[in-house]
Amino acid sequence: MNSKDQKVLVSTFEKEVCEGLTAFPKYLSSKFFYDEIGDELFQQIMALPEYYLTRAEYEIFVTHKSDIIQKFDTDREGFDLIELGAGDGKKTKVLLQELLNQNYDFTYSPIDISENAIDGLVKNLNQEMPEVTVQGQIGEYFEVLDRLKHISDRRKVIMVLGSNIGNLLHARAIQFLKKLYNAMHTGDLLFIGFDQKKHPQKVLDAYNDKSGVTAAFNKNVLARINKELNGNFDLDKFMHWETYDPENGTAKSYLVSKEKQTVDIDSLSLQVHFEAWESIHTEISQKYDDDIVKWLAKESGLKIVKSFSDQDNDYKDYLITKEE
Image 1 (tube, rainbow, N blue to C red):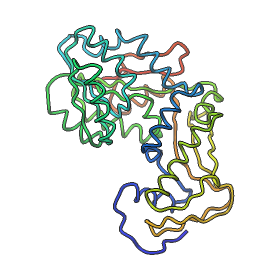
Image 2 (cartoon, helix red, strand yellow):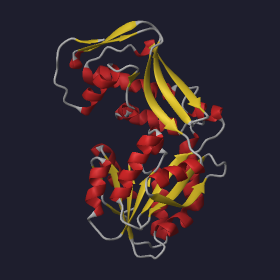
Image 3 (cartoon, rainbow, N blue to C red):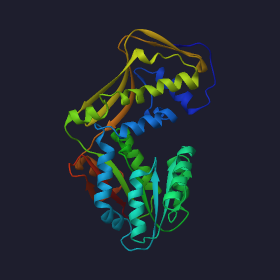
């Protein structure tokens, strides 16, 4: 692979695409799956019969909502509920409605880097639950968390749902949790979802559905390169491939070149050469058990208070605190 001309790269997308496709082995971040088309594809994925994660976490919320919110504010002194990457808020609305029903004193601050996502969620909640005080925040998670840390002295409850931490290998997950630790006061809570280890085939099916929606979702990063960076990827010349290692609990997604080919990305002044069956690593989806989560929390200075599971034990939400 070679650079046609030297070029100043401006956006994060440009920089990371250039770095990933000139590395060996090649890689692209799953965060770039998401644009208007990617968002719609992910909504389709969450509705797939194979994709158990969303249903399992929703079941947890419906089944345990009273216990969950009681743990959020045991003393009824009021608290700030902060959610990282709230999406459409479907699951969170179950808790918000229960908080309203039980007359808790709380504010809700969804955080996302997407202004479109936050504006849509705030507008929706203002229509569906006008009684909820919603303070949408746009920006990088930890910049916003640092800002919110000093806004009030009330307890903070930080939510990270959807097993999003599973996109990080353990070393980076600990870095992430340590940043959360630093953003929390003593007594603040973290409510975070971890997808559990299970039958390997069930994991594989969740990320490689028969209808091909997940494959299209992964390939959307190539479509974005074509559209936004003047690339000429032929999506039909790449196949989506999923692996799962039950020993370390790591599921990995790849896009595999079906033939020897060269791709031009004009906005980067870059040619990318692929050998036949060469891969682009696109996503990690880590799976956990109680011992691993306990270890991650301990390494980060945090302590598990309680966990909530769906009836099949496919998925768990852990309530974690920062101690003195």
